[in-house]
Length: 481
Image (tube, rainbow, N blue to C red):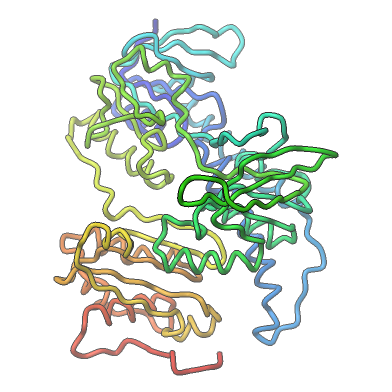
């Protein structure tokens, strides 16, 4: 049995713990069956945002007449779009694999690892002659990520369906598509396919899309998606069946007493399940270790991200806390420091941002108004439209806004942005929240470029700060752009 200082199960963000160990002269191993880089590189964030970028271009062309420009989309090379994106992201994955193989202190095992006892694993290899090989690590990091969740819909085992993994590289755009799931994955893909001309229906269980967002945010996203899709909120997919290469979804309204209410039937060429993800821990044989998981299979850790088994750590989607690549990267740095330097660092997700790449774009950090109300916490909120900033008016971001939320003493509790470049604008607030004070003044007092979109942030936080003297722009009294 080969012995290593560090064994990382998963070739995504966690593999950087192995390379950090290698830089310190330690011996490390990485176990990965699929492409390197994790789901984000080849099956998630990057390819989906590349597709959405194409949808944004088409959407801008269709809106061109609003700005006095006569333009039209004559043709869309759908297969060319998907194949180009596929080649780009898989080239990145291949380069990451080559980089690991070229590292003298890191061994890359191609296959799937399962524990045979604490910190010892057997590898179900995809390489000839290597099956059944066993390795042991003085420390082990579980970073196997997650996979699409298939819900228990009656008949689902008898029909062909897509998951978010499958939907990214289709050779042809479906003419008609039913998406089950109203979270961020369903809304992003609904926007993409709808913007490119597919007849899309979305079925979501909650009364609004992206229900975990602030109420004002989810209301705007729901209304906007109705431009591109037929949205059925408050419905749950009850059954599916397939006939003549077409799939029919029967969805019902659940009454308060749990009984089935009215139902609808939606028929399409393709069915896409976007009902969340589940941790990829079922093949690890964790019962042979002291690693505990919750009822959904998520790994339980302490604040340092060490599991309930000594010397075994976990990060990324297997935690079920912050299912974002940037969160996994943050956790990777923390685990590396704790494993390699015994730093004792603890996780802090208070200023963990996230974004949804629909049209309009969404970005959020901190708590929502609903969460604060549920906690019974005092707060003040300001909602400022994009049109308060001159560039927001110029861009025609009619439904865009910044909602800034703070405690009575000026501590930033949350910020929620809807509109162009939201994911970029948010970082000014993230940096402020991550500072020692995390105060409203940290955003309101610095000089902001004029005319730039971040002036809408300036306007919102300036109002929240109740500044005695203000030079924040306010173009809300202008009706044309």
